[in-house]
Image (cartoon, rainbow, N blue to C red; front, side, top):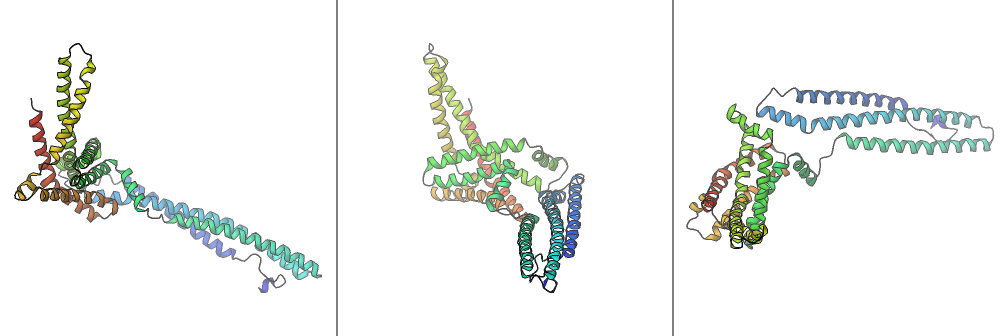
Length: 377
């Protein structure tokens, strides 16, 4: 206050030297982060020769979030340094003007002259405060971007779906399989419809997975190079689940197609003078009825293990066990969207693998044999 005794207040508070020192530190930090981002990208791009589970985990950990965080921090600090540089220049100019007003106030001979100088100083104080608020707002915005906020649960789930749509279809199929089995306890037709949708998703997932070179490589490397790592087991379990899940849908379509074709031919033979559309309605009706009845038959078939273990139990008990098994698949399907924990992922793969070997695969074989016996000429 002593430096501005004549004015009675400091119209432009601040320390330009401190602001300049902070600006230099931010600039140096931004440069370091930019270099770190470049090094990480080089590490990822030059680690392709390193193979195996550890290499896969290393590349995943580096390429997933770290470059994004480093890049965001670099941009934020560089922007903060630029803003502070501008604020430093503004502060220097305002303080020079405040010093001039102080000199004028000290030299004022009349009360009127002193009042005019103080009015100008007050205008400077108002402008200075507004400029400081603007700089503070831009710095707060840069700080918000410095460390990316963790996405919410829904955003995280959506990101994972977009990153791997094939796995998302497999997981959705498992969840629908559980929902369908649960609904079927009270309303079999509705449950069957839900399970058929899930089977269709499994077929779509199977097509996407088998067309993915990375997915195929994780399997072939296991057999040709002995790389039985986490990727191999995960892909193998996923493949079993996709195949087993698609069996009911494929079986329903195949049996419906056979029945529909036979019905259409019979209708056309009965009316040889008719057009090719004569057999369309009977064929469509036979297709729908046969596909539905086949699906319902498959839904009611117990897995070989469940049928053997619970042969003395009631049908209600066996149905409950089937729902519980399907619920296990739904739980492991949803677990990956809730947590990034590697131990949880490996545990889910182990549970799915055991379920696939003990339930999914035997059930798929049994159902396929049942449908094949009906489809044979």
